[in-house]
Picture 1 (cartoon, rainbow, N blue to C red):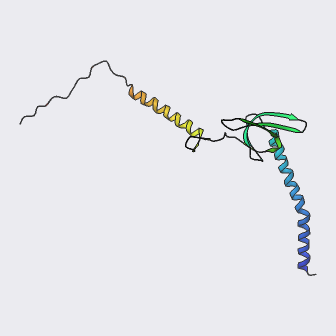
Picture 2 (cartoon, rainbow, N blue to C red):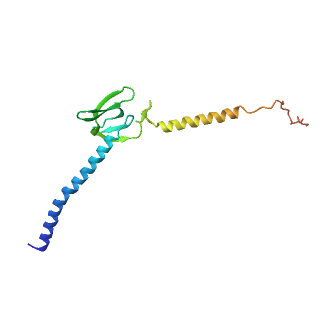
Picture 3 (cartoon, rainbow, N blue to C red):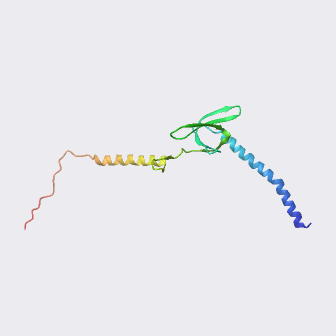
Length: 149
């Protein structure tokens, strides 16, 4: 065997030994993140499960098999699903988007800002419309000019 063959075999053996240790370290880190997230869940959080169910946590209960949460899903027709806290993929900080009659997504923050702007506009137009009028009658200062031909 040549020196290059020995070096190649040494590298492969080293990788086969090191790789499982690196993977177990990564898996432990991911498990710790999952446990921390499951323990930090609280009522009112919006979550997404690994199966894709999206909803708001309404109840958290501890049972023999672990921690379970009840999720409220749907907008007009409320449905409730109970899943394990370990099934939570992500905690989101926002509410689901609402859709108007036309099918376009309505952003509640933008709508709130628009209504605030409308209120401000109404206040300013009402101020302009109700100017203080003095009690003195207006006099016409322009003189009638007669044109002579």
